[in-house]
Amino acid sequence: MAKIKITKVKSAINRTQRQKRTLEALGLKKIGQVVEHEDTPNILGMVNKVKHLVSIETK
Image (cartoon, rainbow, N blue to C red; front, side):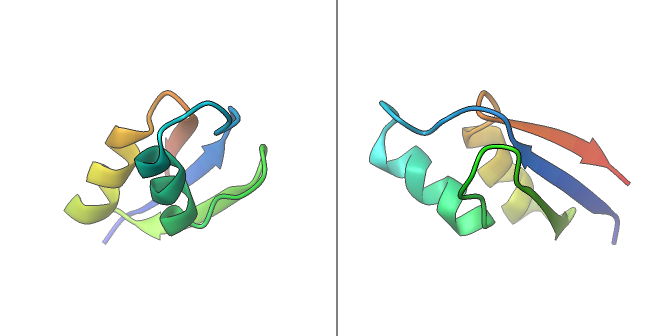
């Protein structure tokens, strides 16, 4: 499977609890933090829910 790099670029302050938990489930806590995940439908769905808070880079 392909990998994707997800970077948190915006704060989760004043966001819904669902979006905060999605970021936490992706492993993102601080702005500028980068995590790598497999390019699976589950991960892509989570990224799609918080796409305004993160940036995505395919490898």
